[in-house]
Length: 351
Ligand SMILES: NC(=O)c1ccc[n+]([C@@H]2O[C@H](COP(=O)([O-])OP(=O)(O)OC[C@H]3O[C@@H](n4cnc5c(N)ncnc54)[C@H](OP(=O)(O)O)[C@@H]3O)[C@@H](O)[C@H]2O)c1
Image (cartoon, rainbow, N blue to C red):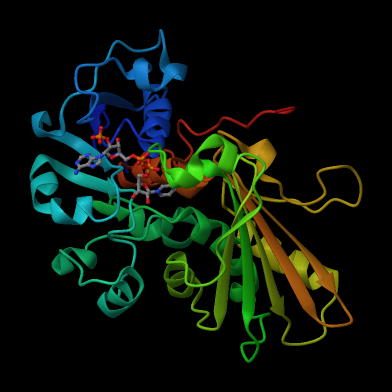
């Protein structure tokens, strides 16, 4: 059901000068069903959007406004550093009937898990239960018409979409650990530089960023229900992109056709999931390179029949399926629009 069929919904973005905010701007300025009303940046108030996001030059005359100048709108995207959305959620909820928060503030349903992984009590515990987890591949029906959706973790999304086909088909031996290695690009760190993102230090890096203890472990356990899952993150030479390679052991002897069946069943009806498993060519398995700017998540697998090890692979653009793309997909569902609206860019090749 279209909630407001005769008018464009007014959408604003808080944190629009960041990388996720910039991607939201790119998507929403070309979205046929909504109108971009305001975009905030404290540091860039008064500057044109293109002065921070040069890809928008000539396409919009909008200027950043200070977050204090935010006016009421129909739906608000929050793309803020960790903790900032939760601290001010009452104010934001007073400004918009619907909110999509791209941070980790409202992703975990369990307060104890939040404290364990984020090291502090949740600043707005009453709000946790109101947010639907913002990955349409797992919460599509709950997102339809919903008022509040969380964002998704990019590493968690690549990992979850790699594992869910196996989880849903009941193919994983739960007595053995499931190990996930995610290789990530530098834009995961956001637009503000640090010593580790300084070009001579970051360029060419294959750097163990979080061999253990990454916070997205909590999101993976929540979504897959797999408690015995373990995550390592490695930074690689990419700007955009995340590639999850998950290793799980099968409950019983399997043939490839069993896995095909499981992946097809999971991908059915999911407009942004593609199974990539070719016998020939260069792109035989999912690869983030060709997904830059697109909302697709490519999933694939390989089976070692001797050991029963299943290697499940998922590639995404961390700023798209791993953040802004999924968030716009959620917006479409929340507003009763076609889920794929504004998200049809297929990526580039060669790139
Ligand atoms: N980067 C990714 O791949 C990715 C993927 C999934 C989820 N996320 C999540 O999305 C959120 C944004 O990430 P990002 O990479 O876009 O970060 P970012 O590039 O550092 O951008 C943060 C934005 O928040 C604004 N901001 C900071 N403090 C604020 C406050 N108190 N009130 C209002 N605005 C404030 C900043 O602009 P001003 O300081 O100028 O106001 C900036 O526009 C984070 O929570 C991140 O965890 C990121």
